[in-house]
Amino acid sequence: MDKESIYELQKIDCSCNECGYLIRDIDKLKRINLELRKLHEDVFNLRKENLIREAKQLILTNKEKGEKNLKKSLILEFHYNNSPTPILYGNCSKFNKEISFIGGVLSIENQKCFVHRKDIIK
Image (cartoon, rainbow, N blue to C red):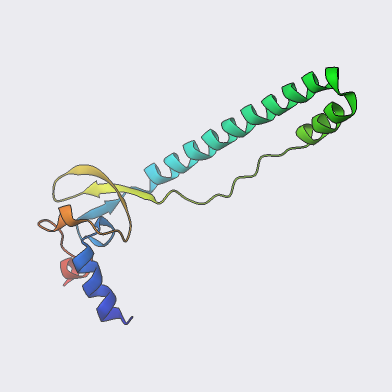
């Protein structure tokens, strides 16, 4: 797809991501991604605690299997894939309001207000 075709497709899609009225809110995006990371870490820690508790209970009935499971549970480490949320944040300068959107997704509701960012510059 050439640049002109991409431009025309973006004008049809009317995504806030390409709108000239968009003012990106990078701070909010960073804040949301940090909150998401914290949430994932909290869920991981709860699951790890549950596995450890279950392994300790299993030791009472099956010592060998319980100790094996406990050892596996204790060495678990949290790893975050750091993939950002697909939801983007900004402010619409035309309507003076906060917005959230997914870039590159057709937004028919924006057909009446959308102006491509390249058209605003001209």
